[in-house]
Image 1: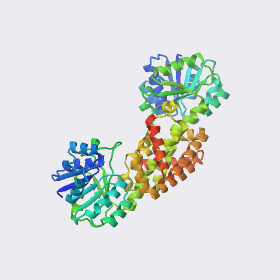
Image 2: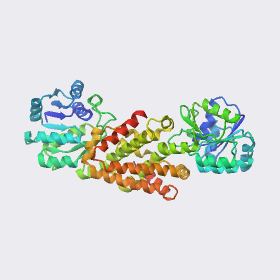
Image 3: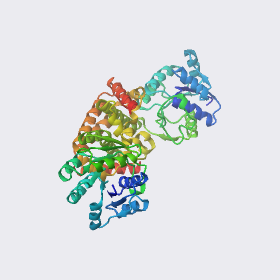
Length: 279
Length: 279
Protein backbone atom coordinates (compact mmCIF):
# COMPACT_ATOMS: atom_id res chain seq x y z
CA UNK A 1 0.00 0.00 0.00
CA UNK A 2 1.78 3.08 -1.29
CA UNK A 3 -1.02 5.50 -1.95
CA UNK A 4 -4.30 6.16 -0.15
CA UNK A 5 -7.21 8.31 -1.32
CA UNK A 6 -9.59 9.62 1.33
CA UNK A 7 -12.95 10.68 -0.06
CA UNK A 8 -14.57 12.91 2.55
CA UNK A 9 -11.94 14.72 4.60
CA UNK A 10 -14.20 15.59 7.55
CA UNK A 11 -13.72 14.37 11.13
CA UNK A 12 -13.42 10.66 10.29
CA UNK A 13 -11.57 10.98 6.96
CA UNK A 14 -9.01 13.49 8.21
CA UNK A 15 -8.51 11.45 11.39
CA UNK A 16 -7.75 8.40 9.21
CA UNK A 17 -5.07 10.44 7.41
CA UNK A 18 -3.54 11.66 10.68
CA UNK A 19 -3.69 8.16 12.19
CA UNK A 20 -1.94 6.70 9.12
CA UNK A 21 0.90 9.21 9.50
CA UNK A 22 1.22 8.61 13.22
CA UNK A 23 1.31 4.85 12.58
CA UNK A 24 4.25 5.37 10.22
CA UNK A 25 2.65 5.36 6.76
CA UNK A 26 5.04 7.15 4.40
CA UNK A 27 3.16 6.83 1.11
CA UNK A 28 0.96 9.50 -0.45
CA UNK A 29 -2.45 10.46 0.94
CA UNK A 30 -4.76 12.28 -1.46
CA UNK A 31 -8.07 13.82 -0.45
CA UNK A 32 -11.40 14.70 -2.06
CA UNK A 33 -14.19 16.66 -0.39
CA UNK A 34 -17.30 18.49 -1.56
CA UNK A 35 -16.25 21.37 0.71
CA UNK A 36 -13.16 23.30 -0.28
CA UNK A 37 -12.74 24.43 3.35
CA UNK A 38 -12.68 20.88 4.72
CA UNK A 39 -10.14 19.97 2.05
CA UNK A 40 -7.93 22.96 2.97
CA UNK A 41 -8.17 22.15 6.71
CA UNK A 42 -7.19 18.52 6.06
CA UNK A 43 -4.24 19.68 3.95
CA UNK A 44 -3.15 22.21 6.56
CA UNK A 45 -3.15 19.60 9.36
CA UNK A 46 -1.17 17.09 7.30
CA UNK A 47 -4.07 14.62 7.15
CA UNK A 48 -3.68 14.62 3.35
CA UNK A 49 -0.73 15.74 1.26
CA UNK A 50 -2.60 16.30 -1.97
CA UNK A 51 -6.10 17.69 -2.64
CA UNK A 52 -7.91 16.54 -5.76
CA UNK A 53 -10.35 19.25 -6.80
CA UNK A 54 -11.39 18.96 -10.47
CA UNK A 55 -13.13 15.94 -12.07
CA UNK A 56 -9.84 15.19 -13.86
CA UNK A 57 -7.91 15.26 -10.59
CA UNK A 58 -10.57 13.03 -9.02
CA UNK A 59 -10.18 10.46 -11.82
CA UNK A 60 -6.39 10.52 -11.56
CA UNK A 61 -6.49 10.13 -7.74
CA UNK A 62 -8.91 7.20 -8.02
CA UNK A 63 -6.82 5.53 -10.73
CA UNK A 64 -3.55 5.72 -8.77
CA UNK A 65 -4.81 4.86 -5.23
CA UNK A 66 -4.06 1.44 -3.75
CA UNK A 67 -6.73 2.02 -1.08
CA UNK A 68 -9.74 4.31 -1.37
CA UNK A 69 -11.45 5.23 1.93
CA UNK A 70 -15.04 6.47 1.62
CA UNK A 71 -15.58 8.59 4.75
CA UNK A 72 -18.87 10.25 3.79
CA UNK A 73 -22.52 9.72 4.87
CA UNK A 74 -24.16 6.49 3.67
CA UNK A 75 -25.99 7.93 0.64
CA UNK A 76 -22.79 9.60 -0.53
CA UNK A 77 -20.93 6.29 -0.08
CA UNK A 78 -23.47 4.66 -2.41
CA UNK A 79 -23.08 7.46 -4.96
CA UNK A 80 -19.28 7.35 -4.89
CA UNK A 81 -19.33 3.56 -5.32
CA UNK A 82 -21.28 3.98 -8.55
CA UNK A 83 -18.84 6.62 -9.80
CA UNK A 84 -15.73 4.65 -8.87
CA UNK A 85 -16.79 1.17 -9.98
CA UNK A 86 -16.14 1.54 -13.75
CA UNK A 87 -12.57 2.73 -13.12
CA UNK A 88 -11.42 0.05 -10.65
CA UNK A 89 -8.42 -2.21 -11.34
CA UNK A 90 -8.00 -5.68 -9.79
CA UNK A 91 -6.12 -5.42 -6.51
CA UNK A 92 -7.40 -1.96 -5.61
CA UNK A 93 -9.26 -1.80 -2.29
CA UNK A 94 -12.30 0.33 -1.57
CA UNK A 95 -13.38 0.52 2.07
CA UNK A 96 -15.85 2.79 3.86
CA UNK A 97 -16.89 4.20 7.23
CA UNK A 98 -20.66 4.29 6.67
CA UNK A 99 -23.04 4.03 9.64
CA UNK A 100 -25.21 1.27 8.10
CA UNK A 101 -23.88 -1.69 6.17
CA UNK A 102 -26.58 -3.80 4.47
CA UNK A 103 -27.37 -1.42 1.60
CA UNK A 104 -23.69 -0.70 1.07
CA UNK A 105 -22.87 -4.42 0.97
CA UNK A 106 -25.73 -4.92 -1.50
CA UNK A 107 -24.32 -2.21 -3.77
CA UNK A 108 -20.80 -3.60 -3.47
CA UNK A 109 -22.01 -7.07 -4.50
CA UNK A 110 -23.35 -5.55 -7.72
CA UNK A 111 -20.60 -3.01 -8.39
CA UNK A 112 -17.27 -4.25 -6.96
CA UNK A 113 -17.63 -7.64 -5.26
CA UNK A 114 -13.87 -8.37 -5.22
CA UNK A 115 -12.61 -4.92 -4.24
CA UNK A 116 -14.77 -3.87 -1.30
CA UNK A 117 -14.30 -4.18 2.46
CA UNK A 118 -17.25 -2.64 4.36
CA UNK A 119 -16.18 -0.88 7.58
CA UNK A 120 -17.60 1.14 10.44
CA UNK A 121 -15.35 2.79 13.02
CA UNK A 122 -17.37 3.36 16.23
CA UNK A 123 -15.79 6.76 16.88
CA UNK A 124 -16.87 10.35 16.55
CA UNK A 125 -17.35 13.62 18.35
CA UNK A 126 -20.27 15.90 19.10
CA UNK A 127 -19.32 18.07 16.12
CA UNK A 128 -17.74 17.09 12.82
CA UNK A 129 -15.18 18.66 10.53
CA UNK A 130 -11.51 18.23 9.65
CA UNK A 131 -10.54 20.86 12.25
CA UNK A 132 -11.50 18.44 15.07
CA UNK A 133 -9.68 15.46 13.52
CA UNK A 134 -7.13 13.63 15.66
CA UNK A 135 -4.68 10.79 15.07
CA UNK A 136 -5.92 9.24 18.32
CA UNK A 137 -9.65 9.29 17.43
CA UNK A 138 -9.80 5.50 16.92
CA UNK A 139 -7.65 4.50 19.90
CA UNK A 140 -9.56 2.00 22.00
CA UNK A 141 -12.62 2.27 19.70
CA UNK A 142 -14.22 -0.74 18.01
CA UNK A 143 -13.77 -0.76 14.21
CA UNK A 144 -16.31 -3.12 12.70
CA UNK A 145 -15.84 -4.88 9.37
CA UNK A 146 -18.58 -6.83 7.60
CA UNK A 147 -16.40 -8.70 5.07
CA UNK A 148 -17.85 -10.08 1.81
CA UNK A 149 -15.11 -12.66 1.16
CA UNK A 150 -11.83 -14.06 2.50
CA UNK A 151 -9.42 -11.22 3.13
CA UNK A 152 -7.33 -10.28 0.06
CA UNK A 153 -3.67 -9.24 0.56
CA UNK A 154 -4.50 -5.53 0.46
CA UNK A 155 -7.37 -6.05 2.91
CA UNK A 156 -5.00 -7.81 5.29
CA UNK A 157 -2.65 -4.84 4.98
CA UNK A 158 -5.46 -2.33 5.60
CA UNK A 159 -6.65 -4.24 8.68
CA UNK A 160 -3.07 -4.06 9.94
CA UNK A 161 -3.09 -0.26 9.65
CA UNK A 162 -6.42 -0.03 11.47
CA UNK A 163 -4.92 -2.09 14.30
CA UNK A 164 -1.99 0.34 14.39
CA UNK A 165 -4.54 3.16 14.85
CA UNK A 166 -5.24 1.50 18.22
CA UNK A 167 -8.72 0.30 17.21
CA UNK A 168 -10.22 -3.05 18.24
CA UNK A 169 -11.25 -4.96 15.10
CA UNK A 170 -14.58 -6.79 15.16
CA UNK A 171 -15.97 -8.78 12.23
CA UNK A 172 -19.67 -9.40 11.92
CA UNK A 173 -22.44 -9.96 9.46
CA UNK A 174 -23.80 -6.77 7.84
CA UNK A 175 -27.40 -7.59 8.77
CA UNK A 176 -26.42 -8.23 12.41
CA UNK A 177 -24.43 -4.96 12.43
CA UNK A 178 -27.45 -3.00 11.27
CA UNK A 179 -29.73 -4.70 13.80
CA UNK A 180 -27.44 -4.07 16.79
CA UNK A 181 -26.70 -0.49 15.72
CA UNK A 182 -30.45 0.14 15.52
CA UNK A 183 -30.78 -0.83 19.20
CA UNK A 184 -27.68 0.81 20.67
CA UNK A 185 -27.35 3.91 18.49
CA UNK A 186 -30.25 4.66 16.14
CA UNK A 187 -33.06 4.03 18.66
CA UNK A 188 -31.48 6.25 21.37
CA UNK A 189 -31.05 8.99 18.74
CA UNK A 190 -34.66 8.82 17.57
CA UNK A 191 -35.94 8.80 21.18
CA UNK A 192 -33.89 11.86 22.06
CA UNK A 193 -35.09 13.63 18.91
CA UNK A 194 -38.74 12.74 19.65
CA UNK A 195 -38.42 13.88 23.29
CA UNK A 196 -36.79 17.16 22.28
CA UNK A 197 -39.34 17.87 19.55
CA UNK A 198 -42.22 17.05 21.92
CA UNK A 199 -40.82 19.36 24.62
CA UNK A 200 -40.33 22.10 22.04
CA UNK A 201 -44.03 21.85 21.09
CA UNK A 202 -45.11 21.68 24.75
CA UNK A 203 -42.92 24.39 26.29
CA UNK A 204 -41.22 26.39 23.51
CA UNK A 205 -38.94 28.87 25.23
CA UNK A 206 -40.67 28.81 28.65
CA UNK A 207 -38.26 30.03 31.34
CA UNK A 208 -39.85 27.60 33.86
CA UNK A 209 -38.49 24.68 31.88
CA UNK A 210 -34.97 26.04 32.07
CA UNK A 211 -35.26 26.82 35.80
CA UNK A 212 -36.52 23.36 36.68
CA UNK A 213 -34.85 21.09 34.12
CA UNK A 214 -31.65 19.52 35.43
CA UNK A 215 -29.07 17.00 34.34
CA UNK A 216 -31.67 14.36 33.42
CA UNK A 217 -33.34 16.68 30.94
CA UNK A 218 -30.11 17.94 29.39
CA UNK A 219 -28.66 14.46 29.07
CA UNK A 220 -31.75 12.76 27.66
CA UNK A 221 -32.17 15.47 25.01
CA UNK A 222 -28.48 16.06 24.14
CA UNK A 223 -28.75 13.96 20.98
CA UNK A 224 -31.66 16.21 19.96
CA UNK A 225 -29.05 18.58 18.53
CA UNK A 226 -27.80 15.96 16.06
CA UNK A 227 -27.95 17.12 12.43
CA UNK A 228 -30.67 15.73 10.17
CA UNK A 229 -28.25 15.48 7.24
CA UNK A 230 -26.45 12.49 8.72
CA UNK A 231 -29.50 10.79 10.25
CA UNK A 232 -31.59 11.00 7.10
CA UNK A 233 -29.18 8.54 5.46
CA UNK A 234 -29.25 6.20 8.46
CA UNK A 235 -33.06 6.29 8.66
CA UNK A 236 -33.32 5.60 4.93
CA UNK A 237 -30.92 2.67 4.92
CA UNK A 238 -31.93 1.00 8.21
CA UNK A 239 -35.63 1.80 8.33
CA UNK A 240 -36.99 -1.66 9.17
CA UNK A 241 -34.63 -2.25 12.07
CA UNK A 242 -35.19 1.22 13.51
CA UNK A 243 -38.96 0.88 13.17
CA UNK A 244 -38.83 -2.41 15.07
CA UNK A 245 -36.88 -0.87 17.96
CA UNK A 246 -39.28 2.08 18.16
CA UNK A 247 -42.37 -0.14 18.12
CA UNK A 248 -40.86 -2.28 20.87
CA UNK A 249 -40.14 0.82 22.96
CA UNK A 250 -43.66 2.20 22.38
CA UNK A 251 -45.07 -1.06 23.76
CA UNK A 252 -42.66 -0.98 26.68
CA UNK A 253 -43.62 2.59 27.57
CA UNK A 254 -47.30 1.67 27.36
CA UNK A 255 -46.68 -1.25 29.70
CA UNK A 256 -44.85 0.98 32.16
CA UNK A 257 -47.55 3.65 31.87
CA UNK A 258 -50.25 1.11 32.73
CA UNK A 259 -48.24 -0.15 35.71
CA UNK A 260 -47.13 3.06 37.44
CA UNK A 261 -48.88 1.91 40.61
CA UNK A 262 -48.44 -1.88 40.36
CA UNK A 263 -45.58 -4.18 41.47
CA UNK A 264 -44.58 -4.48 37.79
CA UNK A 265 -42.92 -1.04 38.12
CA UNK A 266 -40.47 -2.58 40.59
CA UNK A 267 -39.73 -5.36 38.07
CA UNK A 268 -38.96 -2.84 35.33
CA UNK A 269 -36.62 -0.87 37.60
CA UNK A 270 -34.97 -4.17 38.56
CA UNK A 271 -34.36 -5.14 34.92
CA UNK A 272 -33.05 -1.64 34.15
CA UNK A 273 -30.71 -1.78 37.17
CA UNK A 274 -29.42 -5.17 35.96
CA UNK A 275 -28.73 -3.78 32.48
CA UNK A 276 -26.74 -0.88 33.89
CA UNK A 277 -24.71 -3.07 36.23
CA UNK A 278 -23.31 -4.88 33.17
CA UNK A 279 -22.83 -1.92 30.84
CA UNK B 1 -35.46 30.59 64.41
CA UNK B 2 -33.29 29.08 67.11
CA UNK B 3 -33.72 25.36 66.62
CA UNK B 4 -34.10 23.23 63.51
CA UNK B 5 -35.04 19.56 63.28
CA UNK B 6 -34.04 17.70 60.13
CA UNK B 7 -36.03 14.50 59.60
CA UNK B 8 -34.08 12.40 57.10
CA UNK B 9 -30.37 13.12 57.35
CA UNK B 10 -29.41 11.71 53.94
CA UNK B 11 -27.89 13.72 51.08
CA UNK B 12 -30.49 16.51 51.08
CA UNK B 13 -31.13 16.70 54.84
CA UNK B 14 -27.47 16.65 55.84
CA UNK B 15 -26.67 19.22 53.13
CA UNK B 16 -29.35 21.49 54.62
CA UNK B 17 -27.62 21.22 58.01
CA UNK B 18 -24.19 21.98 56.54
CA UNK B 19 -25.58 24.86 54.46
CA UNK B 20 -27.25 26.34 57.56
CA UNK B 21 -23.93 26.29 59.42
CA UNK B 22 -22.02 27.78 56.48
CA UNK B 23 -24.65 30.53 56.22
CA UNK B 24 -24.05 31.43 59.88
CA UNK B 25 -26.87 29.69 61.72
CA UNK B 26 -25.78 29.28 65.34
CA UNK B 27 -28.87 27.63 66.83
CA UNK B 28 -29.31 23.91 67.45
CA UNK B 29 -29.81 21.39 64.65
CA UNK B 30 -31.31 18.06 65.66
CA UNK B 31 -31.61 15.05 63.35
CA UNK B 32 -33.82 11.98 62.96
CA UNK B 33 -33.21 9.16 60.49
CA UNK B 34 -34.45 5.59 60.10
CA UNK B 35 -30.84 4.57 59.50
CA UNK B 36 -28.48 4.80 62.49
CA UNK B 37 -25.53 5.01 60.06
CA UNK B 38 -26.91 8.03 58.23
CA UNK B 39 -27.56 9.70 61.55
CA UNK B 40 -23.99 9.01 62.72
CA UNK B 41 -22.52 10.30 59.44
CA UNK B 42 -24.58 13.50 59.71
CA UNK B 43 -23.42 13.98 63.30
CA UNK B 44 -19.77 13.32 62.40
CA UNK B 45 -19.83 15.92 59.59
CA UNK B 46 -21.44 18.58 61.78
CA UNK B 47 -24.64 18.63 59.71
CA UNK B 48 -26.56 18.01 62.96
CA UNK B 49 -25.42 18.54 66.52
CA UNK B 50 -27.93 16.24 68.19
CA UNK B 51 -29.37 12.90 67.07
CA UNK B 52 -32.83 11.93 68.27
CA UNK B 53 -33.08 8.14 68.34
CA UNK B 54 -35.90 6.92 70.61
CA UNK B 55 -39.61 7.77 70.21
CA UNK B 56 -39.27 9.94 73.35
CA UNK B 57 -36.33 11.83 71.85
CA UNK B 58 -38.30 12.21 68.61
CA UNK B 59 -41.24 13.78 70.47
CA UNK B 60 -38.95 16.13 72.38
CA UNK B 61 -37.12 17.20 69.22
CA UNK B 62 -40.42 17.85 67.42
CA UNK B 63 -41.81 19.81 70.38
CA UNK B 64 -38.80 22.11 70.66
CA UNK B 65 -38.04 22.79 66.97
CA UNK B 66 -38.91 26.15 65.44
CA UNK B 67 -38.52 24.67 61.94
CA UNK B 68 -38.93 20.99 60.99
CA UNK B 69 -37.46 19.99 57.63
CA UNK B 70 -38.84 16.76 56.13
CA UNK B 71 -36.07 15.52 53.82
CA UNK B 72 -37.40 12.02 53.12
CA UNK B 73 -39.14 10.41 50.08
CA UNK B 74 -42.71 11.56 49.39
CA UNK B 75 -44.52 8.67 51.10
CA UNK B 76 -42.40 9.13 54.21
CA UNK B 77 -43.15 12.87 54.15
CA UNK B 78 -46.86 12.03 54.20
CA UNK B 79 -46.35 9.59 57.09
CA UNK B 80 -44.30 12.03 59.14
CA UNK B 81 -46.90 14.76 58.61
CA UNK B 82 -49.53 12.52 60.19
CA UNK B 83 -47.27 11.77 63.13
CA UNK B 84 -46.23 15.39 63.69
CA UNK B 85 -49.60 17.11 63.20
CA UNK B 86 -51.12 16.40 66.65
CA UNK B 87 -48.04 17.83 68.41
CA UNK B 88 -47.71 21.11 66.49
CA UNK B 89 -47.83 24.52 68.21
CA UNK B 90 -48.87 27.76 66.44
CA UNK B 91 -45.81 29.42 64.92
CA UNK B 92 -43.88 26.23 64.28
CA UNK B 93 -42.95 25.69 60.62
CA UNK B 94 -42.91 22.37 58.82
CA UNK B 95 -41.33 22.37 55.36
CA UNK B 96 -40.29 19.54 53.07
CA UNK B 97 -38.11 18.59 50.13
CA UNK B 98 -40.42 16.06 48.47
CA UNK B 99 -40.24 15.45 44.70
CA UNK B 100 -43.99 15.85 44.12
CA UNK B 101 -46.19 18.46 45.74
CA UNK B 102 -49.93 18.01 45.09
CA UNK B 103 -50.51 15.09 47.47
CA UNK B 104 -48.33 16.70 50.12
CA UNK B 105 -50.24 19.98 49.82
CA UNK B 106 -53.50 18.05 50.06
CA UNK B 107 -52.34 16.38 53.26
CA UNK B 108 -51.07 19.68 54.70
CA UNK B 109 -54.46 21.31 54.07
CA UNK B 110 -56.08 18.63 56.21
CA UNK B 111 -53.35 18.26 58.84
CA UNK B 112 -51.47 21.55 59.30
CA UNK B 113 -52.81 24.29 56.99
CA UNK B 114 -51.17 27.16 58.89
CA UNK B 115 -47.80 25.56 59.60
CA UNK B 116 -46.71 24.08 56.29
CA UNK B 117 -44.51 25.44 53.48
CA UNK B 118 -44.13 22.88 50.67
CA UNK B 119 -40.66 22.94 49.09
CA UNK B 120 -38.58 21.15 46.48
CA UNK B 121 -34.86 21.88 46.05
CA UNK B 122 -33.83 20.91 42.50
CA UNK B 123 -30.51 19.46 43.61
CA UNK B 124 -29.05 16.02 44.10
CA UNK B 125 -26.30 13.66 43.11
CA UNK B 126 -26.10 10.30 41.40
CA UNK B 127 -25.92 8.59 44.78
CA UNK B 128 -27.48 9.57 48.07
CA UNK B 129 -26.38 9.47 51.67
CA UNK B 130 -25.10 11.83 54.34
CA UNK B 131 -21.49 11.03 53.40
CA UNK B 132 -21.94 12.90 50.10
CA UNK B 133 -23.64 15.93 51.67
CA UNK B 134 -22.17 19.37 50.98
CA UNK B 135 -22.91 22.89 52.20
CA UNK B 136 -22.71 24.01 48.55
CA UNK B 137 -25.24 21.47 47.20
CA UNK B 138 -27.93 24.13 46.67
CA UNK B 139 -25.69 26.88 45.29
CA UNK B 140 -27.12 28.04 41.96
CA UNK B 141 -29.92 25.45 42.14
CA UNK B 142 -33.60 26.33 41.92
CA UNK B 143 -35.51 25.80 45.20
CA UNK B 144 -39.21 25.68 44.44
CA UNK B 145 -41.91 26.57 46.96
CA UNK B 146 -45.63 25.94 46.41
CA UNK B 147 -47.01 28.13 49.23
CA UNK B 148 -50.47 27.56 50.67
CA UNK B 149 -50.92 31.06 52.17
CA UNK B 150 -49.23 34.44 52.63
CA UNK B 151 -45.80 33.91 54.12
CA UNK B 152 -45.79 33.81 57.95
CA UNK B 153 -42.85 35.40 59.84
CA UNK B 154 -41.07 32.07 60.30
CA UNK B 155 -41.61 31.24 56.61
CA UNK B 156 -40.04 34.57 55.64
CA UNK B 157 -37.10 33.71 57.87
CA UNK B 158 -36.74 30.21 56.38
CA UNK B 159 -36.84 31.60 52.81
CA UNK B 160 -34.04 33.96 53.84
CA UNK B 161 -31.87 31.04 54.93
CA UNK B 162 -32.55 29.19 51.68
CA UNK B 163 -31.40 32.28 49.79
CA UNK B 164 -28.24 32.29 51.90
CA UNK B 165 -27.66 28.70 50.75
CA UNK B 166 -27.16 30.26 47.29
CA UNK B 167 -30.38 28.79 45.87
CA UNK B 168 -32.70 30.61 43.47
CA UNK B 169 -36.21 30.72 44.95
CA UNK B 170 -39.14 30.05 42.63
CA UNK B 171 -42.78 30.06 43.73
CA UNK B 172 -45.38 28.17 41.77
CA UNK B 173 -48.65 26.34 42.05
CA UNK B 174 -48.34 22.74 43.30
CA UNK B 175 -50.30 21.34 40.34
CA UNK B 176 -48.10 23.23 37.87
CA UNK B 177 -44.98 22.00 39.71
CA UNK B 178 -46.08 18.38 39.36
CA UNK B 179 -46.97 18.83 35.70
CA UNK B 180 -43.65 20.42 34.74
CA UNK B 181 -41.64 17.94 36.82
CA UNK B 182 -43.43 15.10 35.02
CA UNK B 183 -42.15 16.46 31.68
CA UNK B 184 -38.60 17.45 32.62
CA UNK B 185 -37.75 14.84 35.23
CA UNK B 186 -40.19 11.95 35.64
CA UNK B 187 -40.72 11.25 31.92
CA UNK B 188 -36.96 11.15 31.15
CA UNK B 189 -36.51 8.75 34.10
CA UNK B 190 -39.27 6.40 32.96
CA UNK B 191 -37.97 6.44 29.36
CA UNK B 192 -34.45 5.58 30.50
CA UNK B 193 -35.80 2.80 32.72
CA UNK B 194 -37.95 1.39 29.88
CA UNK B 195 -35.03 1.54 27.41
CA UNK B 196 -32.67 -0.16 29.87
CA UNK B 197 -35.18 -2.87 30.77
CA UNK B 198 -35.94 -3.50 27.07
CA UNK B 199 -32.23 -3.79 26.22
CA UNK B 200 -31.73 -6.13 29.17
CA UNK B 201 -34.45 -8.41 27.79
CA UNK B 202 -33.11 -8.16 24.22
CA UNK B 203 -29.36 -8.50 24.81
CA UNK B 204 -28.75 -9.62 28.42
CA UNK B 205 -25.00 -9.70 28.88
CA UNK B 206 -24.08 -9.94 25.17
CA UNK B 207 -20.48 -8.77 24.64
CA UNK B 208 -21.43 -7.35 21.21
CA UNK B 209 -23.59 -4.74 22.92
CA UNK B 210 -20.69 -3.58 25.05
CA UNK B 211 -18.28 -3.50 22.08
CA UNK B 212 -20.62 -1.45 19.90
CA UNK B 213 -22.52 0.72 22.37
CA UNK B 214 -21.00 4.15 22.80
CA UNK B 215 -21.74 7.40 24.56
CA UNK B 216 -25.32 7.59 23.25
CA UNK B 217 -26.21 4.24 24.80
CA UNK B 218 -24.51 4.93 28.13
CA UNK B 219 -26.03 8.39 28.42
CA UNK B 220 -29.59 7.47 27.44
CA UNK B 221 -29.63 4.56 29.92
CA UNK B 222 -27.71 6.19 32.82
CA UNK B 223 -30.93 6.91 34.73
CA UNK B 224 -31.72 3.20 34.39
CA UNK B 225 -29.62 2.69 37.51
CA UNK B 226 -31.93 4.90 39.61
CA UNK B 227 -33.34 3.13 42.67
CA UNK B 228 -36.96 2.00 42.64
CA UNK B 229 -37.42 3.03 46.28
CA UNK B 230 -37.42 6.73 45.42
CA UNK B 231 -39.30 6.47 42.13
CA UNK B 232 -42.11 4.33 43.51
CA UNK B 233 -43.21 7.31 45.59
CA UNK B 234 -43.00 9.70 42.66
CA UNK B 235 -44.93 7.32 40.37
CA UNK B 236 -47.60 6.85 43.06
CA UNK B 237 -48.10 10.54 43.75
CA UNK B 238 -47.83 11.92 40.20
CA UNK B 239 -49.31 9.06 38.21
CA UNK B 240 -51.72 11.01 36.01
CA UNK B 241 -49.16 13.56 34.88
CA UNK B 242 -46.52 10.92 34.19
CA UNK B 243 -49.01 8.78 32.27
CA UNK B 244 -49.88 11.76 30.10
CA UNK B 245 -46.24 12.45 29.23
CA UNK B 246 -45.64 8.79 28.39
CA UNK B 247 -48.74 8.55 26.20
CA UNK B 248 -47.66 11.71 24.37
CA UNK B 249 -44.19 10.27 23.80
CA UNK B 250 -45.61 6.95 22.61
CA UNK B 251 -47.62 8.83 19.99
CA UNK B 252 -44.59 10.92 19.03
CA UNK B 253 -42.43 7.82 18.58
CA UNK B 254 -45.15 6.20 16.48
CA UNK B 255 -45.30 9.31 14.29
CA UNK B 256 -41.53 9.31 13.87
CA UNK B 257 -41.54 5.56 13.17
CA UNK B 258 -44.11 6.01 10.41
CA UNK B 259 -42.10 8.86 8.89
CA UNK B 260 -38.53 7.51 8.85
CA UNK B 261 -38.42 8.02 5.07
CA UNK B 262 -40.65 11.10 4.69
CA UNK B 263 -39.88 14.85 4.88
CA UNK B 264 -41.56 14.86 8.32
CA UNK B 265 -38.36 13.35 9.75
CA UNK B 266 -36.57 16.58 8.81
CA UNK B 267 -39.27 18.57 10.63
CA UNK B 268 -38.84 16.52 13.80
CA UNK B 269 -35.07 16.99 13.75
CA UNK B 270 -35.63 20.71 13.17
CA UNK B 271 -37.95 21.00 16.20
CA UNK B 272 -35.51 19.00 18.32
CA UNK B 273 -32.60 21.21 17.21
CA UNK B 274 -34.66 24.31 18.14
CA UNK B 275 -35.36 22.92 21.61
CA UNK B 276 -31.70 22.25 22.25
CA UNK B 277 -30.61 25.69 21.05
CA UNK B 278 -32.68 27.23 23.87
CA UNK B 279 -31.87 24.77 26.64
